[in-house]
Amino acid sequence: MNKAIIGGTGVGSLPNASGPYMTQTPYGDVETYRCVLGSEEVLFLPRHGRNHTTPPHAINYRAQMAALKKEGITYVYALATSGSMDLAIPEGSIVVIEDFLDFTTSRVKTFFDVPGQKVAHTDMSDPYCRNLRSLFVQTAKENGVNIQSGGIYVCTEGPRFEGKAEIAMLQKMGGTLVGMTGIPEVFLAKELGLCYAAIGLISNMACGIRDENLAQIDHGKRISEAKETAMQIITKVFSNQKLTQERCDCSKAVLYL
Image (cartoon, rainbow, N blue to C red; front, side, top):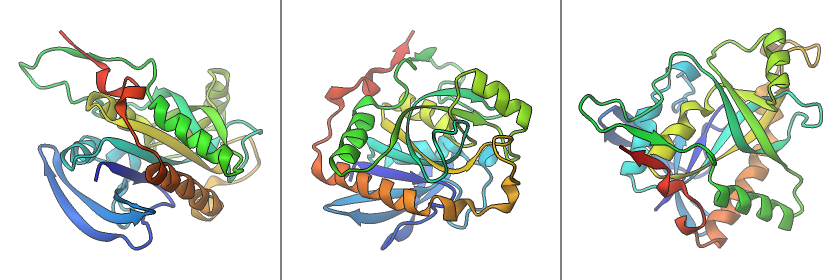
């Protein structure tokens, strides 16, 4: 088993999953689940915990990513329930994320902070595995599924939603979708040499784009169809493709000095 799915808001479980199983890491213990998708056994990690009790700013991201590495995972699709800042990307859309803007403020974002450890720098020119992204897009096209690619994911600290002025600023900076959990997941995955791709599931238009109270909508319901479609695509990629790290630089992204 070398494949995993990370689920967020609205994706807290998968059908027929067994577990939880406990993985111990130097950063804390992590609960994961096992399920069979198509012909593949896949590890499932509910980012917020089994009952969705951990808010985005308090998630132990280092423990979670270290647990995936310890369990032998190499290929990861992370589902990220997000708000859209682009009217061309409405609720229910599926977005393949290509790059990020980091506006988090209090999170530990690296494994390379141990006293006495050699200095290391991680390349972020292609933060989300280009091979997993390409396979997702290709599989969606082959199955007649309309998705958006080239998404620029803005990660904010949370747990509050962003304000109107903040969204207006983030739009001007090139952001297309906004969420609270994608950082530091992508950084840590890259430091560990994992192939990590993130798929945005749009549950709402960001603050100020429409006249709605984001606390009064059912985010899980709005992404329900997109979640099922995204899972079908991921299942086909994991089952039908012979994955290799020779088609990306994810395993060669760290410069040790």
